[in-house]
Length: 102
Length: 143
Image (cartoon, rainbow over all chains, first blue to last red):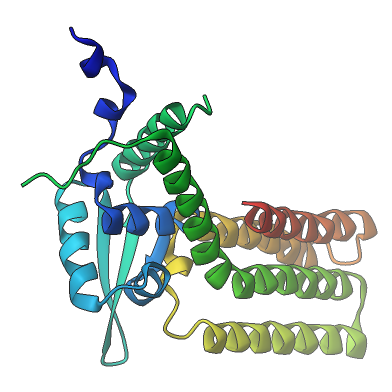
């Protein structure tokens, strides 16, 4: 095994290295469940761009997407799953290690 | 194509700061109506069940109607406040908070029905409502 392979950055989650996906999961970290609009406003992104990244995170099992209706208006909720939280915590721990905080 | 790049210590620190800021601001933007609601619900139902448990006749009627009115007004206010932003309410944490309140409230109502006039039982169950909702609100406020 080489020294490069031992660097903590190799343990960073590939999916969470994208800045938008990183921000989406960060926004859901404390709240756990938020509406699509709340995440969009927190991340400051367009609906279509958020939708694309949410699909990727959902596909990886990091997010659960809920659909409901308030009258005739569709409401989408985003929930950080247990798998997503585990990956997020590991990603943050690696970042702390890289930053020299652990 | 990979969208990953090597992360330097300074970048890692910047990412950690951004994560903390985003997490806190997204949570702050949603949680305060919920904290206010559960605190107000706890105070109203605690005082209401205590009053119902210890009074009779017209005073009991006033306590009963008063509690129902205040609780209904609180729920209406809450529903209007969170309209369009209700996803947080379906989160696991809030389900636990509301379930905890409901269990203590049901206990207090049971005392009103089956142990009416018991100062000790009414005091304990009503205090329990207040304690449980305050703990839930404090936990959410500090998270």
